[in-house]
Length: 295
Image (cartoon, rainbow, N blue to C red; front, side, top):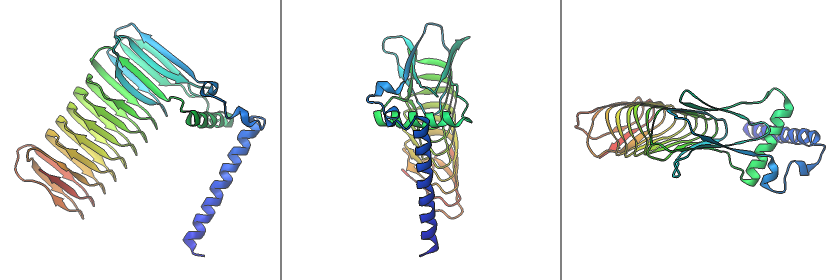
């Protein structure tokens, strides 16, 4: 038997053993009653859905989530509302103070085995019954000062014509999707393995950072944009920027432009193919990735 195959077999056995151990411990905590782990309907999963209605003036929005998706939507009824769900091990602190709306995750003590096992059970239940993991903010106005959204594994979605002076969006494995928003000051986006998708955005100073996540910029206008990825691909589809500066390690930079730009491209082992001409300086640098821009 080859050494590599033996290693895979050992890893597989260890994973199976770990799964069995967790299953036995979980059953023991629940008195070996399987019916306590699998409710007969979603309403029995002890999810407390909360709706907060805001009557105060709000200029700043700050949301801190973990696995919940964060979605901003237009309030067609003109009512500022925040919807979220709490569970046994998922609690939130909500406040509106001095024009700033804050919703932040208030975790339990994860050092206690019973808590993380209970949270694991809740995750299984939510997955089985499609329980919502969305934080939805319904905004009655289209213009606000600052927006700060953070999540770990949940997605961040903005697909309405909102305007912010400054916006900062941070995620780890969740995706970030922006359509139609207009930050007039700065827009900062960061992910680790999550993808970044931007379409029909008009922004001032824009920055993005990703590790393995792909970055797609489509039909958008930037005053200036800088960004970096490690292995994530960068795709440009008919964007405009007075200044552009991208760096990747192994990720490719590909796309199409309507007008030629003043390209300054460097790569160590990759290939470069870009149109010539133009006045706006676009700097693109890779190590092993290719740079392929067409007009």
